[in-house]
Length: 103
Image 1 (cartoon, rainbow, N blue to C red):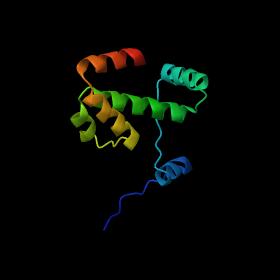
Image 2 (cartoon, rainbow, N blue to C red; image 1 turned 120 degrees about the vertical axis):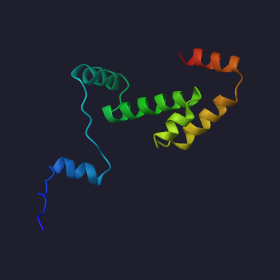
Image 3 (cartoon, rainbow, N blue to C red; image 1 turned 90 degrees about the vertical axis):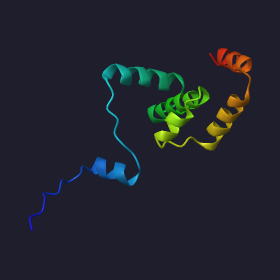
């Protein structure tokens, strides 16, 4: 039996697998922009990216795209689900007012 050659992973890749991490390649302008935003908000870039993703997914859910988000298999934290449920229970007028307030 012939065996396929096994590829050795870099130490960083091994660490990423162990800690449920992944490497994200960003265009330079995105990296620079995220660096600036995270510094202004006094957060790490990782925390900033996580927050932005949570906000985006919450917004998708609020717009009624719940099935699309759920089909991705990306569970939102319980507080985000509560926010979405409360938002969906509001009247259209109140939804528009809240979205305008949040800017």
